[in-house]
Length: 327
Ligand SMILES: *Cc1c(COP(=O)(O)O)cnc(C)c1O
Image (tube, rainbow, N blue to C red; front, top):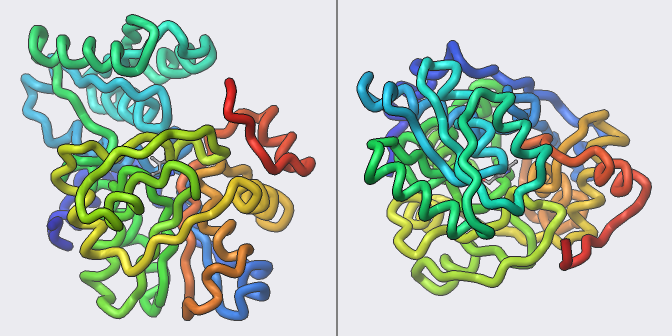
């Protein structure tokens, strides 16, 4: 478990490097849910997602010689962006390993954020082999996307900001994949307000944490294409931190369909004037779907990220509500 004190220390440590994101009441969702609904606008975080908090907290806890050698990860998504930015801001250097299949715009974006890019092989697994080699042979520090106490404590700072903005919060809706955000936010919120409900929200297909909690141990699930691409991937069969924390701390895990996620993206755009990615929309999706009708307010939904391809966003805004399995 991660203590409130550890999360408070993380906040102190990262405060100069991250944004305290806006917290706003949603008139449209409050009316619909018949209780007060507020939104934590974490998609407005630097690099476009909350992942910067955990990555920054991790890099800041490395020794000077570890920072000098640099950090490494295989993620080309929000964790890779966040780690690239955090390392650059703190005077370290990130190396992001990726396969030849990663599109050029993603490579360029990671470079723009100050990282070195290593392109190897034709799969994520081959990129991971290169990560392991750089750790073993060049002494780089691997910073994982969720299953590490420094990362979880950093993500938990979102929870501190929520309970401060709304001390009587009754339920927090948290986008859930590997569970770093959910574990950290749940630890912070429950420490301050033990009666508050903490609910993980994820997509119907490939919900690894939900399947693992149901099975009683970490399991692998088949991956599917989703509007919530940032929620893809497993939790790791050797999961040490986020699985036990999510299993203990989450009051419920709610699943949303692709059409519901699309409706969440559209609602955020039309009524809140916010551009959010699918993973960031699952809380709104769950509220719109009626699946949270029994949940008492005040409710806070975390909009976790905004990195969506704008051509895709336009299609969703115009009504697209399924995403093909192919590429
Ligand atoms: C990574 C990510 C999540 C899920 O976070 P976990 O800590 O893996 O559960 C949710 N939303 C966005 C935008 C993300 O980038």
